[in-house]
Image (tube, rainbow, N blue to C red; front, side, top):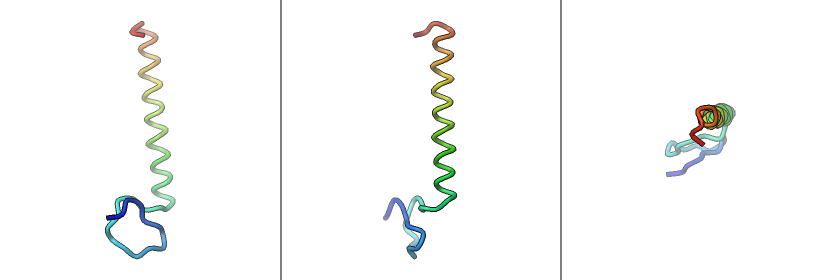
Length: 50
């Protein structure tokens, strides 16, 4: 089983495909996680947990 499939490959055993939808989705998920980590740190500083 392959983890990332190229756009021009003809196979069905892959987890992610290297195309525009996957790249945009990954960027959205990474941005959301960064925002969530920032919110946790900000709330920790505000409530003096750190």
